[in-house]
Length: 227
View 1 (cartoon, rainbow, N blue to C red):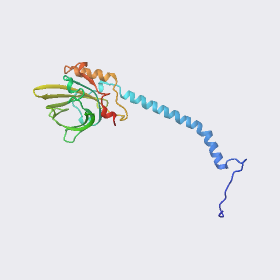
View 2 (view 1 turned 45 degrees about the vertical axis):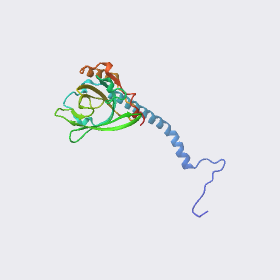
View 3 (view 1 turned 90 degrees about the vertical axis):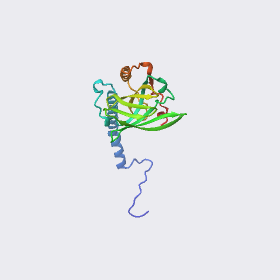
């Protein structure tokens, strides 16, 4: 063994090295209560966070905006919750208006870009649609399966947005509405509280649409579930 180095070998009756033993003793003596206090604080923090999220998702009618929209605030990740139309075939499975939103982006030139997905023969197909702004605030136009105007019906910017689509094709006019919720937790399918459905039903009435015209999309977005 090189000089200057000493090896300590514990005998059968020897205790732990003085430094290590006293350190562990202090750790066990003081760490127990500290660990319990830390766990309690963490539990309270998580509870507080959970309650904050629940409170933040509660519907507040006073926060709803129906004019003078700040379209830049709409940019973000969204999820399709409900659709409604006076032509149900167009929003049911394989309908040409049945699309699932992924992202909305307000472009610098004022246009609105939508990222959608839809199913084609069991495969998820992504499509990007850019709607050109019109002279009206919150209203856009696009040519897809005819001429269309897409307008924000109402939003609170945080929890939901409702769009109204007016489609003209082969001399026929079709109305469709879509309710989106922001995707705060990508790992789960968003679920709006019943108050939002009631609000959507009231919006649908403005266009002559009833509950029988509404389609629930929360469990139908198979592309989302494959992520």
